[in-house]
Every structure is written in structure tokens, then in C-alpha cells.
Image (cartoon, rainbow, N blue to C red; front, side, top):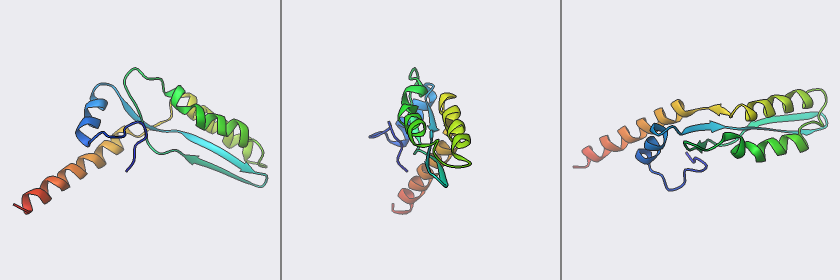
Length: 116
């Protein structure tokens, strides 16, 4: 699992960032192609303590503003939903990602004990 803004952090360091007040979020973006509208989520992004999520969501919000409106009938509605989600700080997935990381660390620990 790749986490944007968390390159070179192992699971333990990531947990320390979360303990300091960081969170992991998805941002949304919308693109419309006249009769088809796509609303998608970004990869998980680490928002460190003290950082503003709105700054990290800017590229996704800009994509939605430029390319989301043009679909009929869902383009405007989905674009507004994406922008609203991003302005509210994204979708918090910290608990889910940290649960996966905890499972991964437990798996690695069990495999290390088996090889001894």
C-alpha cells in the first residue's frame, strides 16, 4: 500500500506520526465526459500534525473544478460533492489503514519466528 506524503516511513514511524496528530485521508476528484461522469478517490495521503488538508486537496479540487461540470445530468452534482468532501478535509481512513499496518506487522513477526 502506497501512502502519499509518507514515503520512506516504515509502519512504526507511520504510527508515531498518527500518534502525534497526523491522519490519513482520501481526496475525491470528478471528471465528466459529456454523458459519463467519474468520481474517484485519491490514494491515501498522510496529513501530518500541523498541516492543512485543504492545501493537499488542492490538485484534486482543481481537477474537479476544471473537468467535472461537463457531464449531464450527474456532472455538477458529483463535482460539488467532491469539492465539498475536499474542503472538509477529505475522507479520514486512518483507522482502516492503521489496522492493515498492524496486521502486516503481526504477519511479519510471525514469519520471523517461524524461520528461527
